[in-house]
Image (tube, rainbow over all chains, first blue to last red; front, top):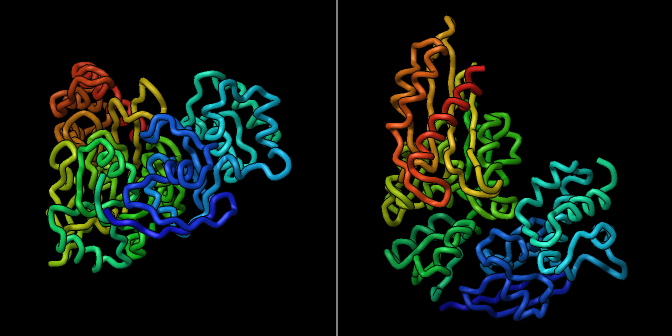
Length: 154
Length: 282
């Protein structure tokens, strides 16, 4: 097994690691970098719990070879808030956008990517984009409301 | 998963690595399929050759004759959002945009999709209906083949070892042609199709059907071109469509699976082929 020197930023902090070729980004983020906000759900790219931003693009960390992160900018849920919550995080609290919380880091990352691309999505655009982030608690109503609240009127 | 990882910067380097490691090497494009197959133990290469750093495999652009070139490493999302691809055919950007979720579309590539040859994928039937050719390179030279000759069975292509898909070339579309891609999704919106239908159709000046191509996904070991339906429609008025559609049942070879029984898929193929024809003959 080959190993590789990879350098990337995780939520603005530079990381340089020697990793084996078969490592996946989800494991490197959680186990090597200690950023456990990103959750492993299905492990096959379906549920969205491991959603991360790579150079601003929404990806499944459970499907991404960690060597692909070399030279790139990774954002996880830990990187969203500075001193204050983002409007989206605040809206998830106010609108009941979560219950058990396991899917929430992925929901927030996916919604952040949506609003970066479409600042004023209508409800249909929100449902279509967020379709890949599963939630067993909310029935999705709170999540859609939260994103609408953060975005302002469509 | 135990392998050495290689990231060549040029196609020539990638081809040399493929030749050096032979059957022990496997190419990785976006990685969505390769990563899963390796984790499930279905694929155990000694060497993984990633194509992501090879610039010449990227890009989506009009060709000088009014066709479209899609580089093998273009992501599904890049096609979905490409102004050139949309100008070429909105049905093409629809087909790429209907794949799984935005996360998968950000990672999965056009070439990787074709090499994976899952018969339930969305892009291949649409590319086939648009009469695409696939360019392939090996250390011995290049060739191009009609996309219909690429997939030969479930997850199996006609590519020889040592060959890399470099691009997909779509020919100019005859003026007056209409195209559509329909995907029947009875379970969830991010699922593979139970049946999908890509169709293109052009009327002759007299109002008869001059040319049509109809290709179905998820109802056989490869995308299936409904040649009998096409033959029954060419030169005929659109009123023939209802009878012609019935012929699709005998052209496909669906299996029973969690997306429906073979009999159900046969019936749905008839229904959705009819809907696709309704779209392109409106």
